[in-house]
Image (tube, rainbow, N blue to C red; front, side, top):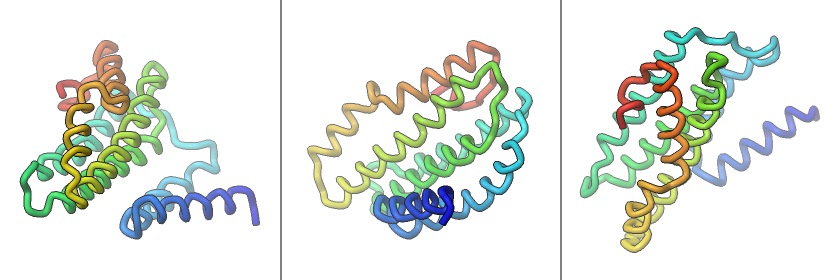
Length: 172
């Protein structure tokens, strides 16, 4: 078996253990759509307007999922699962594009922040499912200073400083 085949198998097993079948299906679908273009030198670098559209589009899905995941919702666990999935899909979508050269570092921080925040939301979802009020309160208290939130905020601020219009992401 090739090295990439072995790595792919390990990734699938890890994804299955971490988040269950629905997440695995979504990750595999994204990988199937994204990875074929990687063998020929990778994706073409996006222009500034193309990149702005990609980020706004990815973040709009995240924002919609979080709007639906309001505290007190009777199906909060499901809505948090949707929010987690939207974060992972946004991260995968943005990881598959090549940002303009002037925002490469910010782009990497944004992708990492989205993925790390998805993991935090997964933990929150588990806490909500088991009714762990202490873990939920701790999550809420950590939000303003959490590493993923800081990574995303710094990335957005850096891009905004460079004249990028990221829509709501720049304002949140």
